[in-house]
Length: 497
Ligand code: BES
Ligand code: MN
Ligand code: ZN
Image 1 (cartoon, rainbow, N blue to C red):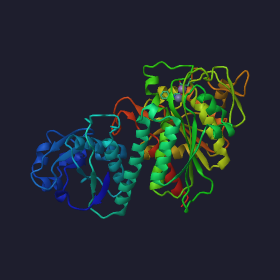
Image 2 (spheres, rainbow, N blue to C red):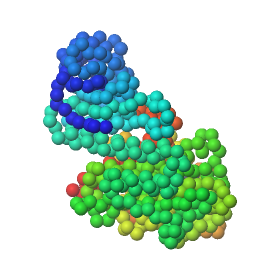
Image 3 (cartoon, rainbow, N blue to C red):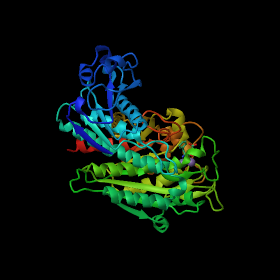
Image 4 (cartoon, protein in one colour):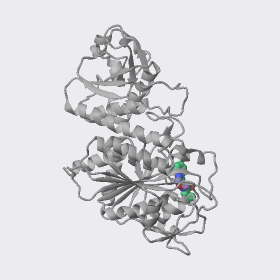
């Protein structure tokens, strides 16, 4: 989508649809600017639209060049935030698709557009709200999104332009992540996924190298190989790298994403209903890492960043790993497998222990890891944990802040030492499951045994995949994590200025 910023007056904006987010005060006080530009329709609309969050009305103006206007409520001005702006913009995007608008404008007469964050939120809401996944439809009945978006502003502020551009880059990266998650599992076997990653690297300008099964064996990634044993398709391990000349960090930031391209549970088979049927999304962590690499490359972020993606499916089969198997991991530790459905931590442990060879400044790992995280927090927010050292609180604060400003929210969970009791094995160094309670935490405690650097774990099992549309997300992959990581990395690069 083409996104631009314009200082043309609202009466002269030549668009098929003009989206106007308005506060509840706007409509009680009346917006002169709008009435002047478009005539009495604005006043008459006040009976139907009050400016409350979520309400809207499409109007056909008497004057001005915009063909249609949609007023979208954003509530009381004192409580307007970025998330409301994204949702309002997405509501406008729905209307745009409905009326088949090719060019769309957004004007916000009442709130101060001077901040780059507002412009970013407007663009994000529009692009994310326009998203369609039509790859498998032979008859496209979900509508074509708009081609051009114009953000109208009253001053020539560079900030607004920068915000709009960031919004475009980041949301297009979110849409790539959504696409990967929404792909049919047989179109994203580990090899096909790694090809898609190579293609993404070429297109966006970051480097990719892919390890095949032989290399994975040589490297001793026992966890990844164990999970892969029941599969017809060999595993891959993709290494993504963004290393521009003007980097501000000498030790890289490493991003790790769980790439289970389909999780049947293995021999500890999942039931289908409400469980296995969404497990094509078990590579959403990987998709988030790919999307983030795309975004930071396009933003030319001055940071050295590496992405690691272990990929396999998890299936039962003649040769599948079984409960009772003891696996020698990449780190040298041994793990007793007691549930083959706890596969994510097996492949992530290898990636995390390999990450150590980069002497990373910090590692952030995203995974659709546990149903327990969904039980605890629902689909709105991801769980986050970190290893307990001196910098722990600072890291949690940073990731929570990045979550709040980006819209990909995360909530902290404890990492008390006592949880380790649950992971004691009678035959090996660790077992791969804890007891019934606190599963999101014991999973994180398991992973902690494989890190020796500052690490942030984000369990995205809840928000990664939605059964029904919500706000600016359609049903299916949400692309969760791209905005979180991009924001976190932007904040980090600012701190190093
Ligand atoms: N991929 C699942 C976790 C999951 C659940 C993701 C729901 C998205 C939505 C993971 O591999 C899994 O099966 N976890 C088990 C772990 C258990 C066997 C210790 C779980 O959460 O039930
Ligand atoms: Mn599983
Ligand atoms: Zn899984």
